Image (cartoon, rainbow, N blue to C red; front, side, top):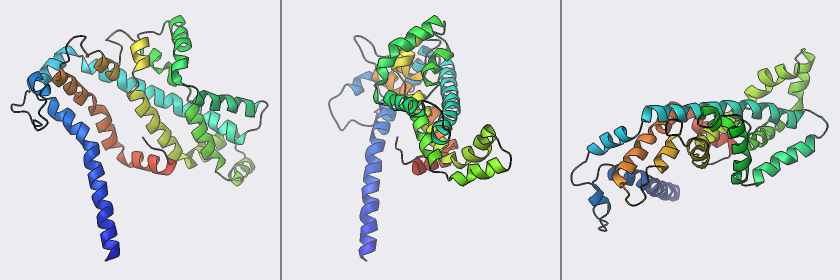
Length: 274
């Protein structure tokens, strides 16, 4: 009986927390179909729109080129994830398993980079992108994510947990360092790699400051940057803004539905949180 009451309380708390987490999304969905006048009302009981305004969808579609924005955003996410996984796999394995001169000093620099706010790197990164003539291009969007200090640290910790006997056995079988890494060690750190891919994709999707700086052209920007530019100077059209935000959520919702198992596995085994 005590166990039943205990589980009932736990499930009740989880349901309440889930509802609280869904309230902002529900508010965004309902606001997207309201009029501007309804969104400005002070009455807290006016939640559901009196008349569902579907023209907000048409107005947003006309004002924003979502096909191009989707392509820019998904392209940036795919490239950032690829480069982060590739470079972090190599550097994480090197710091965890190989011995070379300056190893501790170089890893200390990686940790130092994680401690410094990312805003400090914006000016030198923009100067480099500008000198390379990569502004208003997808490669300019990808540039800061080519190397990930967090990914290097995460995968180093994953490789350090593997026994040395695996490498010794691979060396006896004639494997060199790249073969040992890609055919033996990397598959064993699959959960950490998946977690890094999830974190990288989410951070890239919600990145706002860098796309607004390096890609001021609307044809080369991302969804987050385009949403920020919808804010008017003297008037806020909240229904259209919420409709645009609702449409912008579609890619991440689809990605989560397709890779739900990998999302849960990666977050659970890495000990991280979104």
